[in-house]
Image 1 (spheres, rainbow, N blue to C red):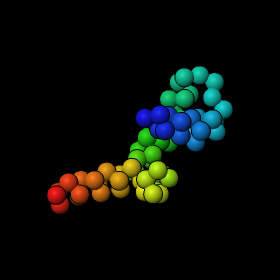
Image 2: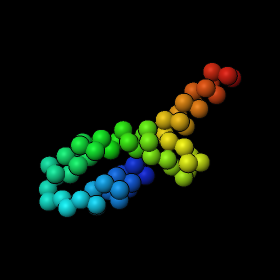
Image 3: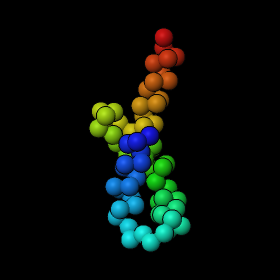
Length: 65
């Protein structure tokens, strides 16, 4: 969770000129940032996979066991 918030701040919020909380909400919502984080953005801790790729791999491993 901490990585999500850090990434959100560094990659979305700090790049915009934001004056209030409503503007912050619009930036996150309009860019659909949380969906991007899970489905498109690769993560170094996951061997450059997306969160979704890692989650699906885990489900496939459970089915195989």
